[in-house]
Amino acid sequence: MKDFDFEVLVVGSGAGGSMAAYELTKAGHKVLMLEAGRDYDPKTETPMFKRNGEAPLMGAGTIDKDFGYYDATVDGGWNVPNEPYTAADGSEFLWWRARMLGGRTNHWGRYSLRFSEHDFKGKSRDGLGADWPFDYEDIAPWYDKTEALVGVCGTNTGLDDMPPSSDGILQPPPKPRITELLIAAAAKKLGIPLAPMHRAVLTRPLDNRAACFYATPCGHGCSIGAAFQTTTSLIPMAKATGNLQVITDAMVKSVDTDENGKVTGVSYVDKKTSTVHQLKAKVVILAASACESARLLLNSKSARFPQGLANSSGQVGKNLMDSTGANIGALVPALQGRPIYNEDGHTANHLFIPWWGHKAQERKELDFPRGYHFEIGGRFSEPNSGIAGYVQGYGPDLKRQVKQNYGAYIGFALRGEMVPNEHCYMDIDPEVKDKWGIPVARFHWKWSEHELNQVAHGLKTAKAIFAEMGADVGELPTPEQAILKGGEIIHEVGTTRMGASPKDSVTNQWGQSWDCPNLFVMDGGVFASNPHKNCTLTIMTLAMRNSSWLSAQLKQGAI
Image (cartoon, rainbow, N blue to C red; front, side):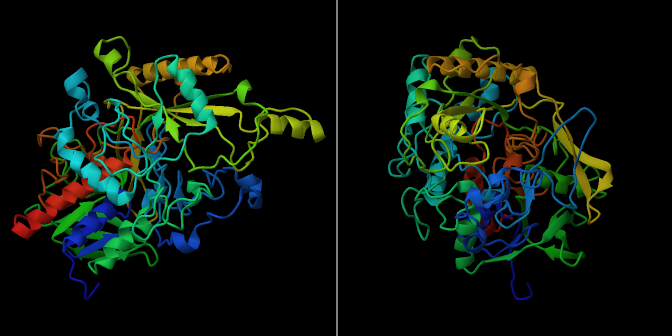
């Protein structure tokens, strides 16, 4: 870095960090990016064309590879060697980390649903949680820019849960599958709509990335760039400006400040040599993921900031949220023995069930405050270890049963909004440190009645839709049994919440720390609420908007 006079230092190469780097380098600013994981090149390393039949256990998940043998997260997962985390007594929480260039964008589902005005102003509607410090209209143009840059397929539906994109922004969605059309017909009888899912998967070529040709699962990684990840798009685009350099295997341990409380740079551990280095920068952007950025701030104590950096409000680590999650499925008799044909499409659902209950909630007809959606699965796809299902026997009769049931199983995955509560937060474990001597995160977790009532409603709704299709899901589990663990949906956000006042938030609407004007947060930590939609599109949109604002401030000499 001797000859690289950078102005901004970005911690993290995932969705927020890479979008910030792209926007700033495009505007002419020199940026240095630090990534805690190793270098990674999906064009040469992805196993996208490997088939399940070539892998141990037919590619099924294991303790080391939770999402299967060919999961694109080649370094990372629920457990990262030498980097533990802890949970307080009575709490269960899972923390997914991808220690590789591109971060979690190598892994995510690419669901790209805009938040709506409902989502940004939940507290104004029901008095719970916090409102965001801006309106949907303020961010809508930035959603357009992000969707156009990233490449999102889908359509405008007119549904109140799905704000429209401007004309010409969205790429065409793939056509619905037979299973999805059957679900749509059943749900319609119950007054529930289905809509094309919006996904960051190209159905048309964009810049130097190819359109998806529906050959391999997105979860294997995507060497052609059709499934969005920063390593095939934003990072090479930013590097092409000549204004970005990247250091990998750089584990940041603290954000450094001077005697006046101004941020001066960061200290990091070179994981290959275990040596500590200090870097100076005019501006530091934390985009290491919500809990990693909060961990950094809480570990950056000083005489001026004894409770951790940017924490005068006491809110760093608080307001931790994940999406609710629950699964339910059944064999649908009407689909058994149907003719077998190529039904691949892109990996995930082409249609899904968006939240339809805003009006019912306004009328106070429901016993939970925030919405959910159903992602749906069920199609002909590459056989895996679960292909046999619950059949009995062996030989030709077993084969007949497997073929009879192939493509006839449908599963619903509920994803819902969680309201922040005082029992869900992270702090620093007073005793445990990682391999490099950095104190680790400790999680506290408890679902509230809001989430349990929401899941109970979802289970009953799913059962009713299955019944319309002639399928029986059996006796429903209790919501306590059905709801997945905190962190398990990998949508944790809120730990450095943005707001309108320094008294109850960590950053302003631009992700700028109230306490340190040259310190920004541009990951999911700034979320004031966690709508039921995947958070990545909004992380990128905020990072683009806020980096554009930061660039203007730098050029004006305001920072």
